[in-house]
Image (cartoon, rainbow, N blue to C red; front, top):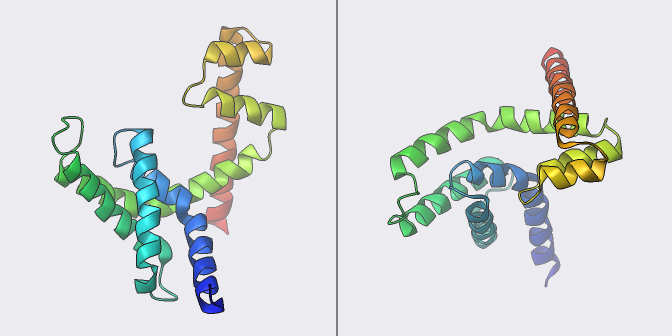
Amino acid sequence: MSPAENERHHRFLRSFTAQEPAIRAYVRRLVPSRADADDVTQEIAVVLWEKFSQFREGADFRAWAFGVARMEVLGWLRDKGRDRLVLSEDVVELIAEESSRDEPHLHRQRAALEACMAKVTPDQRDLIMKAYQPESSIQEVAGASGRTVAGFYQWLHRMRRLLLDCVKRELGREGSS
């Protein structure tokens, strides 16, 4: 790989990895399942790389990536059109527009939540994350925490409340800056 190609590759990777969580969240709002979102996001990454030569240096990578993602989701929906669980193209367009518009706020919320999660102890953070894993069982997580299921739900409720209050403070602080 030439130095210019190597630099182009690094620019793409830096841009994509910085935006990948937002792209994944955007796609997740448009397709029916997490597995579908993973498949579509993977395909979007390939298309973004293939079209990266068309990306203008200095342009907004996120906006460009969301445009590509929107087209890929619509293509995926057309391919899945016979599946009655897939939304109509008009509905997806509406959700895509709203998602694009709401993304900056959602990004700030995610950043605030990450900052707040960093404030809880590693053990607490681990339990919270385990409770929300797709295949997790609350009974198993509660048992591993040494709590009853009811006790674990109460603890989880308190942690969610603490995190919500922290996120609101973080966003308020950001708004007053």
